[in-house]
Image 1 (cartoon, helix red, strand yellow):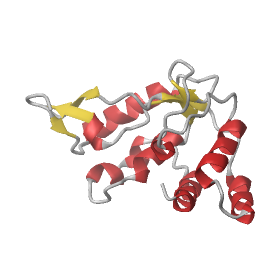
Image 2 (cartoon, helix red, strand yellow; image 1 turned 180 degrees about the vertical axis):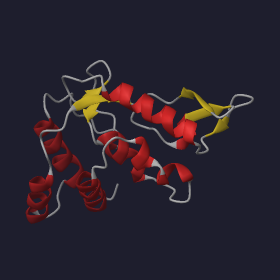
Image 3 (cartoon, helix red, strand yellow; image 1 turned 60 degrees about the vertical axis):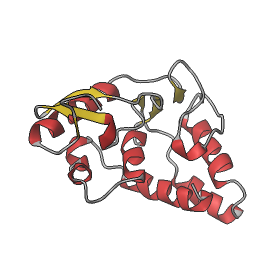
Length: 168
């Protein structure tokens, strides 16, 4: 870590800044789902599985069902498929906005680091990715609904169910 830099600690200014950065990213709409430069998707759950880029959210959803849910009973795949929307906006996403990737100095964000998971993804994925490995004692996580413009409750529940079935 650079001298004088600290990991994210929550303050009103930092929350405001982070919300602004997220809104700037969300303003950049994508024409595919995948990594930057039309590369395959980059998702921590996939452990090297290549897929995409995908033309639409329906293709992305089928990939998630095939790769992550794999050989689970068809009845569970049908349940998940019924809950997967296909109408989210596709936006520019950092992909790994955990506190250790948000550097602050003097009470302000000075850098967002670790961009290798960035790409064009459904609008819910940025928040859901942060919540996957959350340390619920960190103040940052309690402020997420103030930082992100939407909650995506159903998408989070489906993501958790997919994770449980896939063991990832």
